[in-house]
Length: 457
Ligand code: F0G
Image (cartoon, rainbow, N blue to C red; front, side):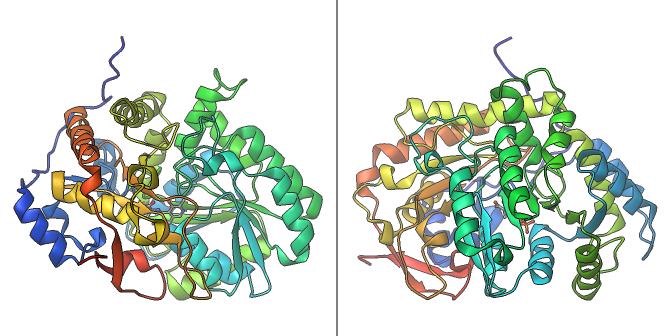
């Protein structure tokens, strides 16, 4: 059959509160044109993030009742541990309340201000956690990964030659770990090929540098490997996942993505000395080592989520629904990042709004208009998010994108058809959109709490 159906039925629903354009124009003024400041029940289709927004299955809700809330040694932890280790067999597993807590603990333990961390592309919290140690976060994605128009099966790949040059320039002693983000969220949700993971590992091995994977969307990455990389078409996804992690020495994970849970994360590694220090840090900041800031019921939900996220019917539907949105937008002439990523469709706002210069935040202007026009909440991933340098100067980001992140198992196809219609209509009147400026700018992670207005307001 050509139609790929959602491989589930809906058992419990959440009503959407309908709003008018006039109402939304007021809500966005009240939110200082920052979509993070909006109230979510003033949003019709919320594509701000795919993080923590998944629908859980009946099995996950059932497992939640099994959660054991003992402070230490809960059976829920051991079920969680078994589920993680089936996919990512690292020796030491440290639960955290979400991904950035794992990053914070890891970088506090392994980095100091003389260090540099290479990554295909750091996610914003990863970068902020590296920089919080005074260390340098450097993105070394392949050049194809920075060209939104260009079709390439693995645009998240690390530039292997650039990585080796970088290690030689900085010196291996100043690089405590190398990271790979799968899929590459800030680069458009693009996958990393197995061959590239292997080659990254080989370079790391030559210089004795441990490789850590930012594993948030590991299952989606594995599905792309199965679809696109020769030799993997007949391999079960679980085997592909295990091979991906076999090349790594550790990982950070946000279970809010491919854990299919509403909260949670972990840090895993093989290095015992680091694990001991990380656990001490965990107890100081998150909680005891068998719960790490989570409840027993969270651990249960993640354990079941990890079984469900590698099911091939699920991944088939998941990636097909993202591609569906991308294909229809491209057919309407909307400039999008190609090919579509796993968890999101990224609109190329710089090309969508060529009359708005990058330092007037075309991505922010577009995201605001999508909200006003159709109640869609997307997220600017561009100069607002990445334009501010640690020394206080500002420069255009490599790309100005608006991310429409698709929550897992949440929206139906007709809701995606509505989205396609809204974006198409805004594209028709794109010449009317105006540039924006900060009217209040926080020092770090300015996109979350900054206030905006139109430049000519
Ligand atoms: N790494 C990547 C690649 C991410 O996408 C995220 C979160 C994190 C780390 C941090 O995880 O949120 O659990 O602390 N990304 C979300 C997003 C917020 O919307 O893309 P967290």
